[in-house]
Image (cartoon, rainbow, N blue to C red; front, side, top):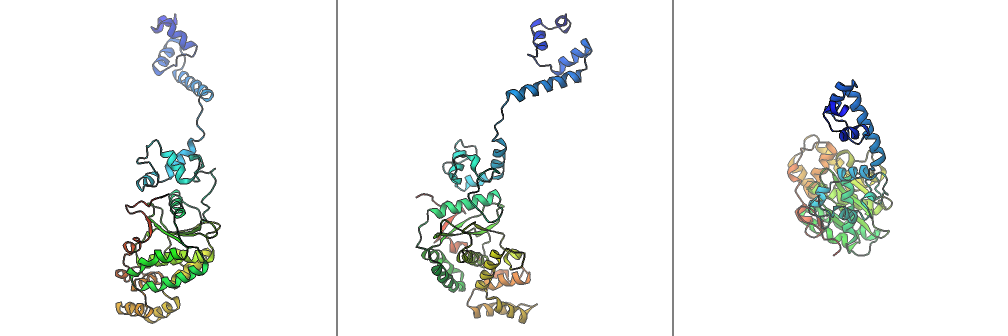
Length: 354
């Protein structure tokens, strides 16, 4: 009778009654008209039945939430463009997961350490963004392949004194890579990933292999020398042995020595500032000339110290907070320091495992 009233064949009605055919909206309206059963209740019961059935039958891959974090947070597109993921040219490449495993040196993508449960192999002193972690892994990957002289702390201290003589001109900085290699430091330059805001890092591959990585995020003579000497001080002090000293936004108050700055960073900041411009001399200069600093004063002061005026300008900006001062002296330096160094970025991909 029901089949006849609904205009359906008996087989279809039988499937409805035995839950082998779902009740859709149109059928719910028809059943309400024929049997007086509330259509909303019918549809709600149908939905609850299907959900209960799915809970028994459907098995969701427990790795899905982790993959959302992995592919949502890691800058995979940028890593592909930079050539960091060997053999992959597109984010949809079927070999992407294998390439990520090789890059992060893990057996499966579930072990990549941006995931909450994964082991923290990079061992960084501070919390890191996924983009910063990827940059650090690239630095480590390239450093592993570098050949340098045997390291000694005394050799690095001597190297720091040699570097001091290079402050007189931007062109002299082209010797940095060789000096660092000769004292046993794996020094390399890796362009930062977008939004990472990394300036440099110091860590150790083992007890005798310090690594200094720089990003040249700011292509300025003052920033280059400050960051380099900052990382050198980390190495001299033995910082970065237990956990990598990843320096992010190393500028303004982060480049200072206030009590709110971690001790290891205060030590490195003080060494870097004194390297660029002896701070006692700068104090006396500021007392004599503030608040009016003339061009001839900057040039004369720099000449007296035997350094480029860009270093004076950078330290003066930091000390006074007046970042508009003498910006014309903050010359670019990337094109000078990269030719002799191990470099990855700005269109070039450093070879790995060759």
